[in-house]
Image (cartoon, rainbow, N blue to C red; front, side, top):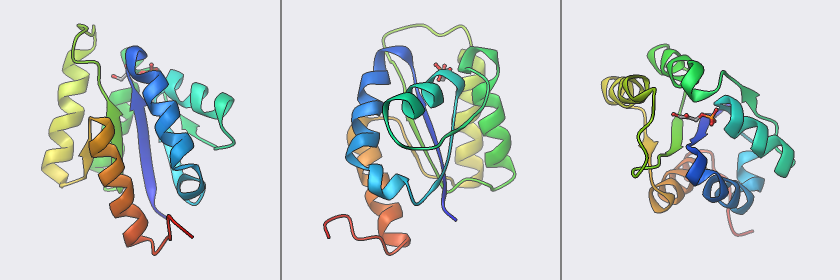
Length: 130
Ligand SMILES: O=C(CO)COP(=O)(O)O
């Protein structure tokens, strides 16, 4: 099954909720994992089930990076806040780097995320406009 990670910094949480609502039917067919607070918000505000890792600052990005290293993920949506310094910046950089190493598609913007999910829908033969 397609496995996707969902991550958003605090300023971007409304955007990721909006995005997952838009793609909820598709995402319901995927195996979802997320960092702690992002995963909690998505499970509270949608009908989706998200496996929750640690919160980002407590190692969640690193845990997701470990899944990338194991080739366990098909894609990552990571809506980053480019205007706020993050205490765990090294973990964030490491996650981006390991995605480059393993050629795992990663979207860090809303529009990029839509292209990524559209592509995963195509791979999964899922009709987004039935
Ligand atoms: O900090 C994050 C990603 O770097 C996200 O973590 P949370 O989902 O726990 O807020």
